[in-house]
Image: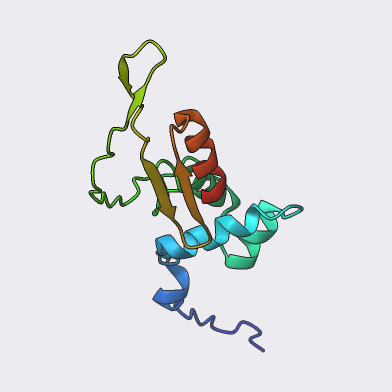
Length: 141
């Protein structure tokens, strides 16, 4: 009695034996994943597993994101659109002084009017540039 049986070799499917295709992620997807890791208490490894991404890759995207180099730039210094409107020059009033001389009064300083989505500001007179900058930075946040 012959107990040996011929062995049949079944070739593996090419698709299953080949390494998986590299998955391309859009910048928006990368940013969403990175932002999930920035939530307090979030684990980069868990977020990576959830999305099927290597944790080291996600750390790399996170480094790019935090440096402002992953797609859109983080808000930094931005120029604001400015509209300058001409107004009539301030009239100079003459005031008599006790000794009979006439002195010109200081002309009124201009006004700054800033209109943002959430606020409107009007600064009259001589504004301290540092104060104006701090005010605008506070409103931008």
